[in-house]
Image 1 (tube, protein in one colour):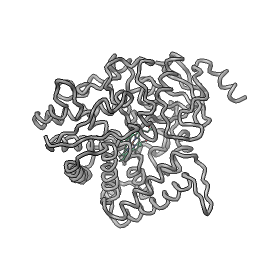
Image 2: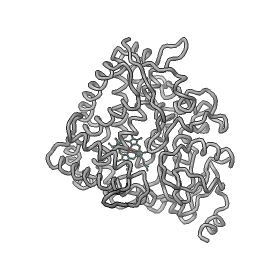
Image 3: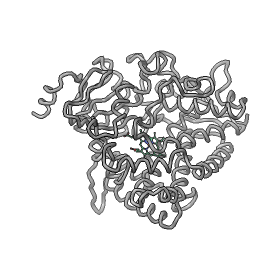
Image 4: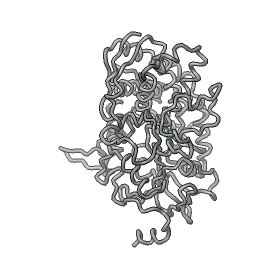
Length: 468
Ligand code: HEM
């Protein structure tokens, strides 16, 4: 009856498919929803579609402007339309425990101060963190140059582990503590993306319960290292006035496997963009190598932003509508009822032709390179969220990515792969198709791009390394 009432109250939301298993009723979270979402948007001819995910009523938002409206909530409680706390407490809080910015709504008491304290600590990306990262990236690149062939995503994941565990927990690869932390972190992510019910017998433990055990160990290790002064970044946070509980819970999140995998996804896409061979053209890496440092940095920055736009590693964010009248989306012209989830779907919002023009689905290395490298005139991708509470770590991730690009380009190696071996879906994920993004004309992502917990090519992409 409740379901019937909701539909009566808001007949304007297109029906979509209530049975579409975006994340899977079976909680097989490694789903590939993209093709389904594209065809659904096409079928109902509306950028917001209705889904049932884990028995929740979800409105999936694929228009850039509407996604921005959902993300850009005011600090003031009276104007609040959506809540992140309500959406995340079921699916996130068990692994990213409070106090945590991610779980706090904009209008919550003290949320603003909490956010500002962390901003002071993380933006711009601190020098110390950058120095540590640059030596990790240098070692990684030197090691890469000695290999004949690598799976580029796996190589980037290994770098992401070294960067996250090194920067935030002061752990070095090759130590027992590093291996333990990494193993717990993997168990935690598996638990986070599994049925949220613990089950444990002397002979069997399900993924959620194993993840919870791993979280207890990981949290204890973080607290111990912070107390021993082994986490330089946490010392900085303490100096900025961050309380110990917040410091510990955020350090656990910053060094999590979700961050590692999201970084790996972006870094792998970036490397593929830089070393793509096109007939009659030098690779982007070769062209950048011939530029003066300032100019090279500007181009790399533009390439990083465009990579973020076409290949966002995290497919969406979650909100629940809390406004009594519902949430009216201007672009889609629909109203999402109170109590429903409103989830921006970033792979399509970032490729919305209304926001980015007819070539929105294509990777254009110079899209963010207006004249002197300014980003004016082109909307920013939603990959790191938006509004007053975007991702707190975006400056750090971008500095890591720029560092990887600079170091690789200045190392005299070439990374070679056959474009056709990547498959049509992966090429589409990278924005290598020139046709507009009309639904129905897209290459299928099924079987080629894994979307959860982060987007990445399904099969390994072997890259052959040679001197250049
Ligand atoms: C490629 C890696 C990453 C991606 C794609 C990413 C993406 C995001 C997104 C989309 C959000 C917004 C969630 C929402 O609005 O519901 C977010 C929030 C957040 N991220 Fe990241 N993130 C990454 C890495 C990091 C790192 C390395 C850190 C910390 C050093 C970090 C810290 C945070 C924090 C603190 C928030 C919550 C901000 C707030 O609500 O005030 N993230 N991230």
